[in-house]
Image 1 (cartoon, rainbow, N blue to C red):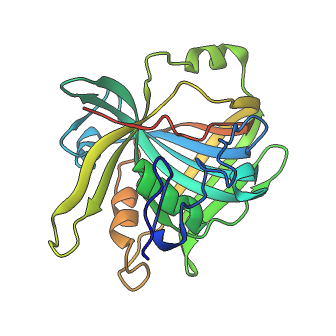
Image 2 (cartoon, rainbow, N blue to C red; image 1 turned 45 degrees about the vertical axis):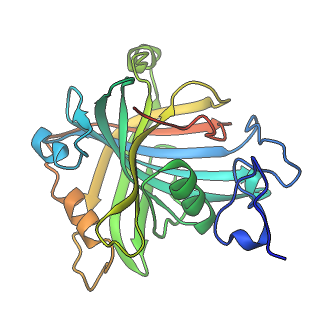
Length: 277
């Protein structure tokens, strides 16, 4: 007798062994509250870039919003409950965008790519949420009282280096100025190809991670001078990602605006992710 799918349970391939556990499905059926986890350290550099270059990275349902500011952020997460206390690291590249649809009119940071160093969050994030996730090696950062350094690579090829220097606590006036209540969330474009019809999507639509909700609390925020370098790659260096790296390396760096180091606790399970119409 073959198996049947259980209603309202989340499945991923392989489906043959029943519902799959993940960040939005505990074995006992409860949700993960994300109150005291993850514990996250983030290193970010923002820079003013070229509007025309960024527009070429946007699907046609999005428009570039205001200043062409790119933010590259590496995050190192520990004690994640849905991974039974384990952690993983990420590297994301965002810039401001707007979606104007038949029902939704939203603005936020468009996530062009998110590298992660663990299969489990890559699969759940791509399939369930529509994050543009791919794999890379993300070693632990080097942190001192006033400096931070991090890197990213793939099978031994280093493609990104980011560093912060002269770190000091973020002034209160800077913290108040940086708050932007008009941001609706993080914007994504979910795309899954159709089997057998190569070049045709099975799924293709915009989605949003709402900024509201969750339990994230910032416990420390430092600012300083930032430095960012992308190392251009050949096909031989990065067979499946060289075009991604080179597109980012080609972005004009007009001016480095800010480097930040943030420590935070808590988050959310992202079950509020939704399609934009």
